[in-house]
Amino acid sequence: AKKIQKAILPSNELMKICLPFSYVFYRPRDIVSGDFYWVHTIGEKVLVACADSTGHGVPGAIVSMIGNNGLDTCVNEYGLIKPAQILDALNKYVEETFDKSNDTVNDGMDIALCLFDFEKNEVEYSGANIPLYMVKGNELMVTKADKQPIGRYEYRKPFTNHTLNLKDVENIYMCSDGIQDQFGGAKGKKFKIRRLKRLLVELSQNQINKQKGMLSETFLDWKENEEQVDDVCFIGINVKN
Image (cartoon, rainbow, N blue to C red; front, top):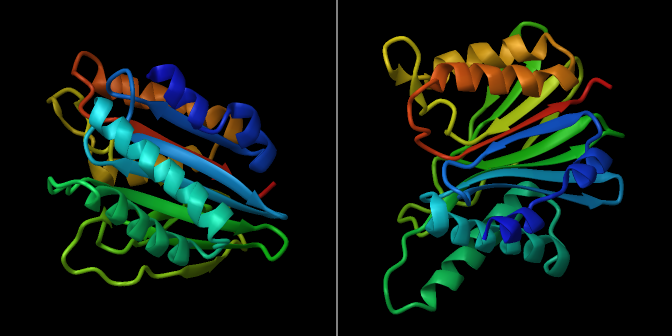
């Protein structure tokens, strides 16, 4: 199962071709993961996603496969490019997949999806419960996600498409909630979002090739002897180069 999942995730080589100045910190809680990342090129533009499926282990991994296939279908078969349109279509795809069952399946995923246009120096973003973080100097800017998942949800609205200028932006980050929910530290408490935001600004002061090691060290030092509580998927992209 681990081999199959690894084969479906983008390889390091593909990530480097699509986004040369980037890295992925990917750490499943169990052997297989409910978190996944995805990348796709459309001409000179690059689509990249960071997603967190319901659950972890085998159930999470199965949902992640559906999400991965759904993204491929939305782009390759439906010909969609705009992140919000892709998420609307992905939601329909996931709901229809689970509707085939006689049992009610409420599983789904949270996701951040970006379309980079480096010629225009812009990024389009749409998110289901996963925000987008951009760092300029010492300033962290957060673009909030829509508060709804991909999957069955009562108060469904179309996803919002944000177009953001990359002028003066150095680094962009997307991540599942695996780091902020991790227990650890001296008092065995959660890492929390406040500490994560500080960490993002700190990471951004360093070269992109050093950031993954720093992130890994921070996470493992915090976790120390505690059990890992959730899957971790973190994408860092330097847009200055």
